[in-house]
Every structure is written in structure tokens, then in C-alpha cells.
Length: 154
Length: 216
Picture 1 (cartoon, rainbow over the protein chains, first blue to last red):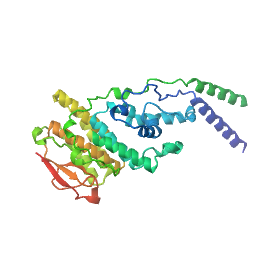
Picture 2 (cartoon, chains in turn red, green):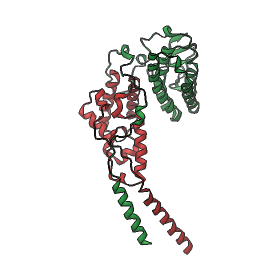
Picture 3 (cartoon, rainbow over the protein chains, first blue to last red):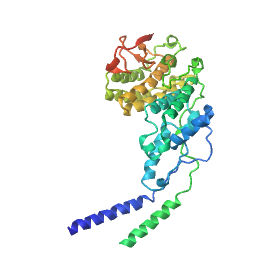
């Protein structure tokens, strides 16, 4: 019995030590103060309502600016977030939209529309922590209609 | 022992607090290596009357998105260099026809390899620009086809079909191919057989579609 207690105690300290240790890993922030030259708003006229929806629901992972929650300061949370953001930006970066070829723009717009339509975006794990990121039914129709119009205009 | 914990906690807090300076230049290195042709490209003549998609559904008319106004017959030099690319594309197509996700994924890998093995030395400057644009997009679709469930594979296949068709218009092929149209998804696909086998629905709607054009 005393041995088990000792092992458990040891394990506790190992975990604590590792947890404390990983806090030393620097956090790479996805932040930019300048408005991007190549933002989607330079390709299309983006009405303010749409812009707000994009900012609240998409830009944390699909732009060069993330609105970080306080718990991002704690590892391993910020690690996990960093990898999500990196992947998100590789897939689609609204701040770089203007640099995409017409072909790529079209295919990105199609993917955006179909993912919003299927409810795959915003990600469930994201909207769980960001309740306001989830599109209401009306917002969903509104934003998809807008993207469809832009797709047709290309 | 208790003291150790306190010391560790204090050290940890100090260090995390110090790392708060903001990074200003973001990390966009990856985009700078891509080739970005000017956005109007060659597609000007594709502009047609925009139709209002007010039902909010994401149909875009496949008839329009695929090679219209481009005369495939004109560029039908019997190019053999494009054959590995087309074969890999057909491998994906046949995987989807058979509702076989793994086979389609394998075709995706073959397609990436075919792109890597393609010799761009013989392309003219204009061809090169357009080719790069096409394969940038096509590669992305192939990567998704490799790792996605079958319904996603089919979505990416739609975009890929446009790319491959445009590549054939640009560079030509020695193969005999059929451009088929699926009225349900309003999209096209390329096939090596005259018989209709619909990759967008597989066994659910195998015979749905019609031949729109024959190449060679």
C-alpha cells in the first residue's frame, strides 16, 4: 500500500514537472497590425455585415490575425491552437485571397460554400469554445448567398 | 518538496509572461513561393450572364465551368507527355465509379507523382504560366482526395475535372476521351470509355449523364 502511494506521488511530480517544463516553450502568435494588401476585400466589395461574420467565425484560423482567448497562454493549449491556425491558413487565408489565381479563387469559393452548407465550418471544436462563431440559420443563408454571387462574378 | 513546487510555478509564470511580445510579420512564407499569375488569366471569355443563385444552393453551372469557348480539337496535338497525368486522373475517376475510396486515394497519389514527373521544358512561356496555375489547384484537389472520405473526394474531383480538362485544351493528348456531363451535380468529368459510368454518384446513379464531347 505504501509503495503504491509512493509511486503515485512520484508520478504526480513527474507530470507536474513536465507541465511546468512545457510552459517554457515560446508561443508563436498569429498577429498582424497592418491590414493586408491582399485581403478578400481588395478582390470583392465586402459589405460590413459579411465582414463581421467572417471576422467572428473564420478569421481566427483563416487570416493573419487571431483573437486569442486568455487560455492560449497556457501550454499545451497554444501548441494545439498554433497547429490548427497553421493548417487553416494553408488551406485558406482571407488576407491572401487576392494573390490566388482565378482558378484557385473559384475552387476556394466553392469549398467555402459547400463546407458552410454542410455545417463543417466553423469547426465544431472551435464553435464549442466560441459560441458566437456559429452561424444562425439566417446568417448561413446570407453568407452563402454572398459567396455564391461572388463565385458567379468570377 | 512543497518548496520545489512553488519555485517551479513561479519560474513557469515568469517565463510565460515574458513571451507576450507580438509577432508582426505573420508567417506567410509559404505563399511567397507559389506562382501567382495575374488573376484575370485566360478566362475572360468565360464570363457569361451571371445568374442569381437565390436559393442559396451551391450549384454552379458545370456546363460553363468546363472548357467552354475552348476548342479542344484545335489543340489536339497528339501529346504523349500528358498521358501519365490523364491516366492518374482516370484512376481516381474509376475509384469513384466503383465507390472505392482507397482506390481513388491511390489515384490521387499517382496524380501527384505524374505532376512531379512532368517535363515542363517543352512548354512555351504562356503555356507554362497557365500550366502552373492549373496544377497548383489540381495538386490541392489531389491532396484532399488522398485524405478525405468519399463524399469529399467527389467534391474535389469536380474541381479537378475542370483542371484536367483545361490542361488537355492547353497541351493536347494522344488519348481518345469523352467529356461527360452530370446534370445532377451540373459538372463534367472525363472518361476513357463511351459508356456512361458516373463518378459523382457511383452505384447510386451509375448511368446518369451524357456525352458532351469527344476528344480525338
